[in-house]
Figure 1 (cartoon, rainbow, N blue to C red):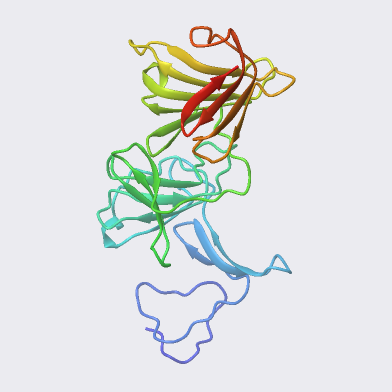
Figure 2 (cartoon, one colour):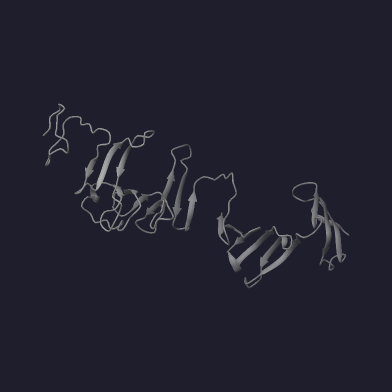
Length: 282
């Protein structure tokens, strides 16, 4: 056992086989504390970067036996064949849960490296997973909701930039879906695809439908267009000069609205509504 007073030791290593340090011990700059047969892992305070001296935890490069993982857990992980990190090559920090059946692993997230995953949660089973919790008023949290098969948040999100959902990806918010394809957006209530109910479509192309309201047919196998306003008009196809936002009273001015001959002129240019009642069509 080494005493509490500072000892003068030969250069090299502490010749200990067991024992307890009972006093302060200093390891100077750039002197590595080596772990493992053959100094597999090194810990040192390194000064190689003159502008950023730092503590270095140097793991092995990674091979079939030695992997660059720093694993934190309780006593249950000692002398255990976890079986999770075979062949790991990316330096990683791992925290194992108390039950030793789940963990979180953090690496650099380099897509060019096989097996790199950034922040990876290994769950014990198909279950909810806590991702982020904040200790502020309202205790906001973000988690994976297994029963809903989606990420969930207890608070709203604010974005300052554009959001791109890719080609035919679905966004579900309170059971209302949105789908974005290039200069196109659609929203519907009900199921997705052919089974959707009321459907709103807006397109940015000057040759496509600018605005459309659709519903499914009786068999829910195809869309039925209820209102279509083409976007390739030199003037607005339909404008509404309403007195209030409920459109109870106002005038719809159209650019040759056709297909309404059954209840008025074959070409409608104006529809007047008073207190929710159509009073004039011309």
